[in-house]
Image 1 (cartoon, rainbow, N blue to C red):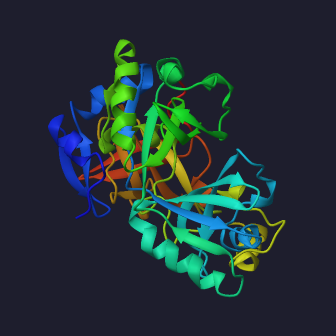
Image 2 (cartoon, rainbow, N blue to C red):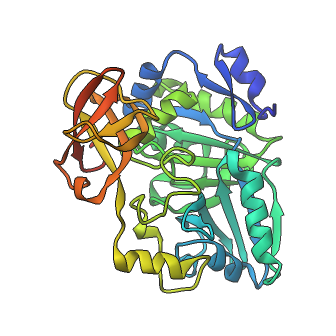
Length: 361
């Protein structure tokens, strides 16, 4: 099992450690509800250094990215980031990712930890005919997510630039916490604002320490993966392996907005046909109308008790104090206010399809 550069720090802080995507990762420190609340009201720090990073460079870099990703990376200017996915050849998704344009011919692709090897093989396969310069630098870089409404104010003393000027899905390469050339990206998977900080493994301990010093007066706390999951689910953000995978189309998953048919990409013809014909199932958000927690894998049934889908992600929402979840249902039951039921043990618990996000802030 791999460790991040901060694993010993998490253990010293009393984190509960679990295997995750091949890494020894902190799942919680004080408890999911406390950590969740910290990010919603103050500022919390996640070590997400297990994520993968690929550098795509040279005159063929954009051509390769356009071929393997669904979004239109030609729209990216230097300093901007873009959410996208890798479509596979059979209508599903290899992974979702963020594309950063670092320089004119340099792009950074940030992928999910559990998919690093699979994604690298996928990109390498298509690059054989294109010839971009590609490097897997996943083992060299660390990533901290500093999230919450107080993140900007708490971190301002650590950088020479005005952090309020970094707009959502924009980034800068600048000094931070005494380290030169750190990527500060106004991205994150919590819906409560903040930054993601990319630095070298050899630098991350210094960054971590200074971040906690700077945030001391703002209620800063370390946050584990359990709260990361409840936070992202309250926003309705897809989790690879649960809500999207090799069998789910981006159009079924509500990711049509990152699937641009203004260019040719892997399997674009089949996805364009699917868009034309319409999907038969859709990923929906639902909230329980009765007590219960909808767990991943639970059956979704109709009023007659017929199984129509499965819960892909579910939890008791710390912010809303009710059971919430995502799952695929037939298109005719996907409209907001549709009534569905979740099979929780022997009970069929009534649920209502709702509009995302669950958490309105």
